[in-house]
Length: 265
Ligand SMILES: Nc1ncnc2c1ncn2[C@@H]1O[C@H](COP(=O)(O)OP(=O)(O)OP(=O)(O)O)[C@@H](O)[C@H]1O
Ligand SMILES: [Mg+2]
Image 1 (cartoon, rainbow, N blue to C red):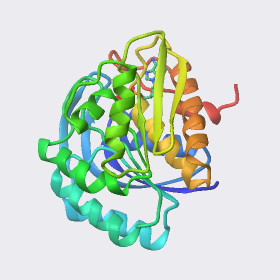
Image 2: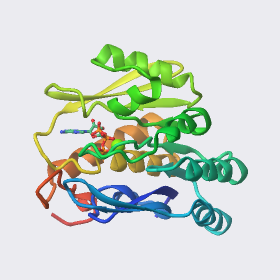
Image 3: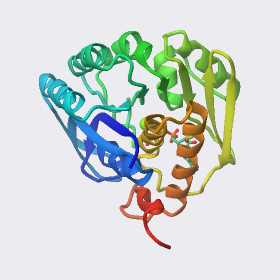
Image 4: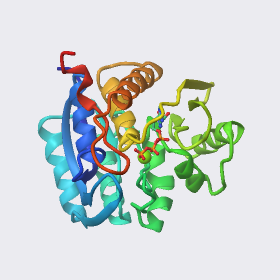
């Protein structure tokens, strides 16, 4: 086991996304997962049926005790839900983990379209969390919300990446799952260059938690000392195989096969 990842995110009772997907991903890639849970969702493969928020101070306490004892080689944030939770997290990160690499997955909507953040949260993500990030991983709708204009195609996506860099993250990964076409193209944008990461689009409805899985995979790589591009490439490979071998559970967007690295075929 190598690489301690502290995951700050919401629980998905369906097990396919959120904290559950994060823990499985980190474990399957050989890392150690610790968690600070921001909210509980009652969720299936169709939609989010209910959200039960954890008091902000308790989110902070979960982070503080883990950082104080176990430590972290990378921190990943997912669903943050309210501005109060976000403020708490920014405070703990700034005080206790200013030098720890940070992967920010700016989760704003579930695959079924349900809003997972309150509107003021977007402002705080932009102004307080993004400047701390090693990499931020918006999907197309999230990138559009963060920059305040729509994104229609690959050219727009590249410009959006540049616009997001201006908020202060070291890198931006714009995920192309929501654009059409036979290929999925993710764009890794840094000050120096933009790298296109292409794969065949897998025809599958089992794509619940792809974003969480990708971000946690990247966080694991960074925690294990990989450079960002290598961490992103490995996380994408792991994710594609998890989509390809998904078990087909549920009637909506089904979960992935996170255990494909562990089970002998
Ligand atoms: N059908 C697919 N085939 C292959 N790769 C996919 C497919 N759909 C998404 N991906 C990949 O999954 C990753 C997540 O992208 P996506 O745009 O779906 O993120 P997301 O919307 O944040 O996901 P989530 O809804 O789980 O939060 C990206 O690397 C993307 O390229
Ligand atoms: Mg997402």
